[in-house]
Image (tube, rainbow, N blue to C red; front, top):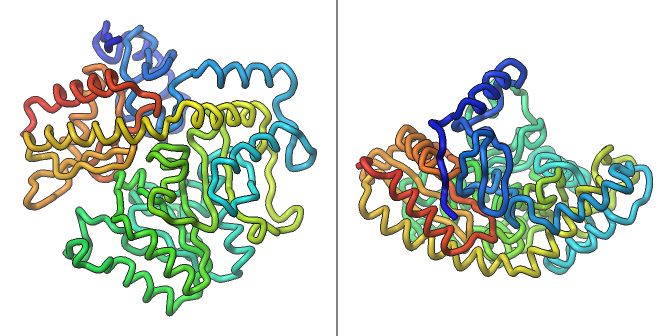
Length: 433
């Protein structure tokens, strides 16, 4: 199968829908280009004018099994015939319990309790409250470039783009500290000679402030698909252990085998105290999970709850997603295809001065655009131009960070589809320095 662009983009039906959207939708929504989705299947998306695109975004890292996986849709459809919402905070139901049981089989040993919600930001909010409940300390720590969500608790920790926070303060007491963004070290040092200076600075902050928890993305997502050195998280774990601080891993974008292992943290050899999951978890249905130990999740009834967490349709879909992710060994495919993509991208990088860095783990890959490799000055205009050109050439991809383009395709993507994606990217780079 190949992309098929039948109309000038956007097509006539898409244009009409976009005009209607402008009249009723919040202008806060971010649309990178004029894609009006009609249907999708596997690694492919069709718009309302019949144009067909290769999916290298999986609807923001959600469609891990590919779009409209038949087993997931069948599980959801079957549950819809019985009941949708059981008010799981107030009544018992088997399907959410079965989902939690399945989820815990994928988690490292010691994770034994789950709080269900509807999104990534909700899973982070629950983790934030859990840290507060257990530690009763004023401050938490998060990293520069982080994205943990847009509700007020998670937004207090989010620090990837100015627009996310402007006008919404005052925020909860969160201390932000540099992440291990080695391509753009804020201290003008180089790894490993730096000795992880970023964490040395963090450790000093721990000594003079009462810190309850540290929130971290194993690989920064919206901040630019930034992969830290292998020992970064191990050193962070040591700091937390020495100071009796809870380590919270935000795996909303990196979890569910996207980097190869179920949790990206497992790939770094680290076990956090609390893990936040969402995005691919429900197969497209709203589903979030905050997972921790019996010891930490001891809060009493009413301390935290919601109305729609444990939605039966989402849990039925999610249980099937988890089983199929394991059955189809998508983690192995993510590693295999990811390594191949990185290899080809590095060859393309050699031909273009404006590609400053190529990085990633599994199928979580970032391409950073610069004005020149010497200055490393971000080049969002070039990134945006290439992203739009990819769309015009029949491929859906999304930006992230100041000037990066991300590849986060379905974890079921084939080598043939990967080659096609890279051919489209290479074609879209033509004429670029």
